[in-house]
Length: 484
Image 1: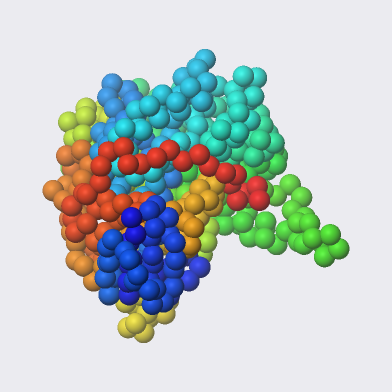
Image 2: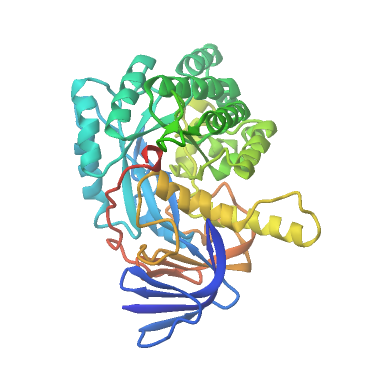
């Protein structure tokens, strides 16, 4: 099938231009001005629209076991919602049961996903034990195209420092990127025990048990362990000002320390390693004040939202390049399940929604900045190009999705048509997941996707899902740009 998109403003991370896009089957065949219509099956007039590469949500938990329940969205409803928000690739995290291989866990999850996924999908491996078998498997993962593994520094299945260091050393050799949930298990564990020793506590105590320092300390420790191991590292869902400031400092030092030897063209960075940071829209939109609201139980996630200083620091990190990617950590539970924790915060399932909101939310912020500049305020430099970099181009490079992340000839035809003038109010009534509420209820946006194309197939158009379960395919990935 051949589709011609005409007269749109094509926005990539590295620049924008007006032109046309020819799609042949599932790839982009041509990009440029005034492409000859020739014989095509469909012509899409994109006059007045922005044409963007599909977003990549590199952090989701679909159909995941959470205590006595499962995350509310499975592979069908989660990827349906993704498509309707302009996300054309989702990464799901597997969890490794002790004694079971990471590849076996991925195979089981893929069996669930392959007939249900409405857009393309990939898997990060998960690891809960470090022994010779698992360390050998790190190399096997790379050979099979699963080039990233997640570790936790807290929870019962988290790794201690010795285990994380061993994993990082193996990953450096295998060229596998380790992503880390960085919270101090010691601080969180002691805090929780002290807070509940006199009985159950309400939702505000969730934040008190996991304050800024719990995350900041673990960010620093994880990065220093990675540096000692000579391994790049990716910090997931960064939510605190201290961590943002440390990563900013570390990245500045890396750039200053790196030098090119003109005689042999090699890069000299010593032990310095690449550090990547991800944050989520809920850390950009909300603060810990939500835990004082009557519906505060709906906002329980880990790490929790922090104070206003952290929210502002994360926006600063987005504008100055400290933050590399935006993802969602999409792992919602239904209202009645969240309500299990109304009187005892420890009983509430952890996790928020966001898979359908990420791209529109970030593009709305870029639109506001653009309008401010047009009105003479040049202080906000945030751009649509930067949104594409955060939500598509960088995730593709960092996680080895070589056919994704930009509108260019030969890339997968993952394309979003975006109306920068369209008014949209987020509500559970107009979302497409299985969830019965949204924490973004009533949030007004200017600009919204009007069409999503996944590998040449229209999967969303004008508010309606048009895709089919099973369209999405498993992506086996190359090596991260961290090793290139």
